[in-house]
Length: 479
Ligand code: UD1
Ligand code: CA
Image 1 (cartoon, protein in one colour):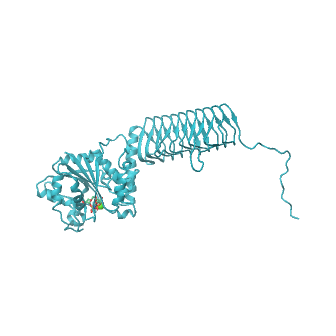
Image 2 (spheres, helix red, strand yellow):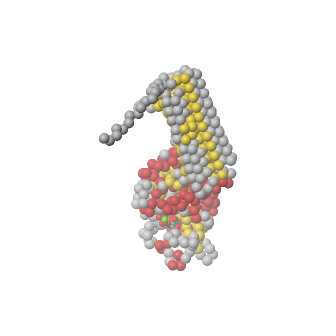
Image 3 (cartoon, helix red, strand yellow):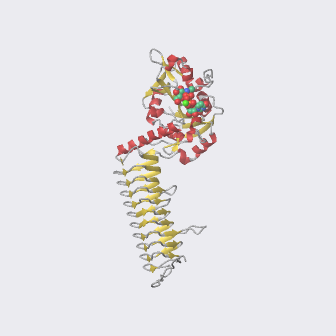
């Protein structure tokens, strides 16, 4: 039977104390609700209906950008998402409770399916857990995901009869003292045959301590109708933990990062310290990859065999090929164009690679060197304090300390071409558009405005004047 997912995301999230709608706060680099939608895709949901309310237009706009909702996140060894589910939105205004929220979604759901109810602020449920819940539901039963908690304060309690069959979910505020002793709680996640859900939701009322329409009241109706209620009890609280405050968000962020780090370690990636590793996107690693402390990976990053990442590097949207070494404190962000670092290249420390940096094999980029939208062919080196922007750099070029490509005339960007085997001295300015011919040399301190012939030496600076025995002006002695 087909699965349709309802994601409750209308709540205010007052305790976040933020202008941003709660479900758009980020965990591992993407919005909480995007984690939930991605999980829905991984249980092959047919459609996902997101119930919005507070900040509805912001949430809807965020999820309507294809790159924010889709794409692969986390580590790519998990079950790949099947075809993206069809995504739609319904608004719940005002918010009269979780039952009222799901009522708003019913017109978007077909009776031939099972409805899986999720919350937009519960990001770390494993697809396998939801699949197990769907199996328990089996297209005909009411299946509840439950958990035993040492301190169940605030949660709905799972009330069972003497035979152990679930009879009801009793909200904390409505519970008697005896019911409050129950430690098995409802996680907020259930799977229900949609036709039955529709009938039960029509019977909800708000005669309870909070004056709300409780989704959890469907349990009573299921029992009354003789429909089996099955609890799928798990032990991993992180999987059903919701985010209500910055503290909870930070705790779940650590749990998520721990999970990612453990997966990488299991794959054979060597992390100097799994507690000092952050992945805010997807990371694919080859064999014998070493990652030192405090590395932050964002967007889509691929590390080839034997790559070493030094301490305190930020690396986003980049492909780093086999054997390359990224020394400490290097900042790489390919944004949309991407960055490529070729095999055996040495980058940093303190280097900056920007969008469109495309470095060939064995390229060296040293400290305080910035590269943007430039290709460097095999063996090219820029080792100190330099800028290469909109440049095409040939094989074995040596680009001196302090040299820059002046690529911007105030209105347009122009290219600099430095052909193979050129040596550019220190502190040169190459005013684009300009080509330095193959094998040529540019003397230190030159400002080059005209292209140079292959094999030539070009010097473009004031000629040195030396005055012998020159007496420096001296201060007058006070009279
Ligand atoms: C709910 C359950 C409770 C369970 C707990 C687990 C009910 C009545 N109670 O409690 O049994 O133990 O979750 O966390 O369902 N939301 C809306 N519209 C609304 C109200 C809520 O979209 O009108 C959304 C919230 O944004 C949130 C989710 O539904 O994402 C759950 O709401 P919340 O208020 O946290 O549920 P509780 O009442 O705490
Ligand atoms: Ca709550």
